[in-house]
Image (cartoon, rainbow, N blue to C red; front, side, top):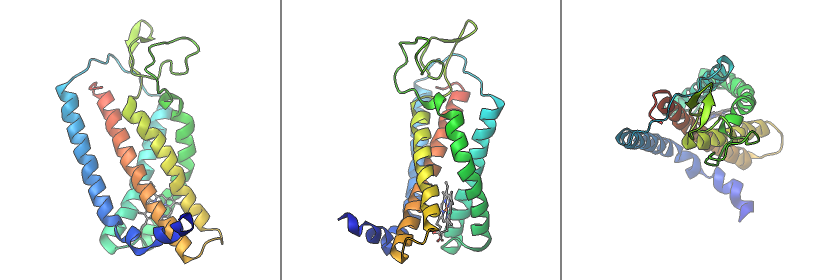
Length: 218
Ligand code: HEM
């Protein structure tokens, strides 16, 4: 079964279906955000003051948003307009690709600790790695209880971005090695497309979660 995987992935329908999958996924993501927003506004929480981001953390986040936006516009935009990426769109995509490949490990190093916690953080001790990075009550700056940077949605999206971002990068890097035939390269391109879509959706949801935190709704 698995020996046929590259052929199945390379098969016309996997790539031909991508524009439809892209449209449906983006509509579904928007709908999800609207429903979650309505639900959040209907059940407001009082999270308390939030922790502030440092300049470096903000720059890394803005850098990640910038290069994923560039990569998404050049690839999805070119596909929508011309049916495939090429010419200047591909040139700009490759500039964004270089930036993304550099930024991805920097994001991991800068933000991993703040997204690490997966417990409810009620048991806070000096040894607890979650300390200061969660939304539970009880963390303090001075005497002020604060909420952490991220809630569960942002944490889930962060690790998804790292995993899918790695796949996006590796699929194109290993395509440059003289290891694959036409079917193999088509399969890698299809995996690249879908992994890229996952990165874009996860980043949109992450940004939404950050905005919710900033405006004090979570
Ligand atoms: C979130 C990030 C990214 C997204 C959303 C994305 C998306 C895409 C999509 C949808 C295509 C297919 C376009 C088509 O079918 O004509 C594509 C092509 C391509 N991407 Fe990306 N990409 C991303 C990151 C990267 C990175 C990091 C690299 C390099 C390391 C890269 C290199 C390429 C190349 C070389 C092509 C052209 C492949 C070909 O036509 O044979 N991309 N990308």
